[in-house]
Image 1 (cartoon, rainbow, N blue to C red):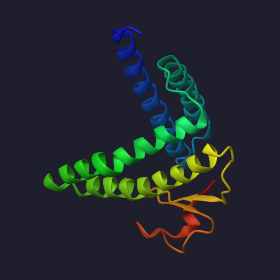
Image 2: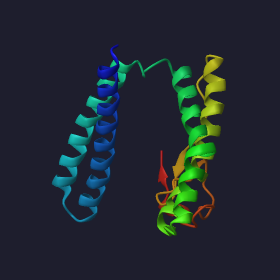
Image 3: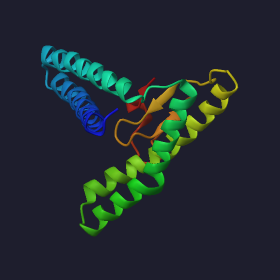
Image 4: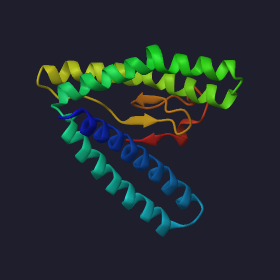
Length: 167
């Protein structure tokens, strides 16, 4: 693939991915504010943006077999743990941006768990097996991820487990 086309696809993938995420969050806000049809519109168009991002990813060769996708996920989480979030958190500290610092710390703590979960999954998939996994709970404030019955309170931010989202 020619470099200019590849860059355009990468930029388009990033833009569509960000639009997808923004519209999902906008949908949640509209729902909470009592606008269910606006929420539905945001969700529908978020899905369209996901379709666009998927098409771009396919053309970039980013979509592979599960074991390879798991390694990509491990690599991404490890980069966030070892480099990205520590650096971004340090910037927020220097600039005394406490909200940003907290946000970066929440993400950093969750990414450590994600990397471990993906590593366990890759081990099983490499042996041709699916993972044995219970219910997955996510803290809606910090992203803390827990398998099985969650603790009474989130160990990262203190939110009661009754607020966790179950998958």
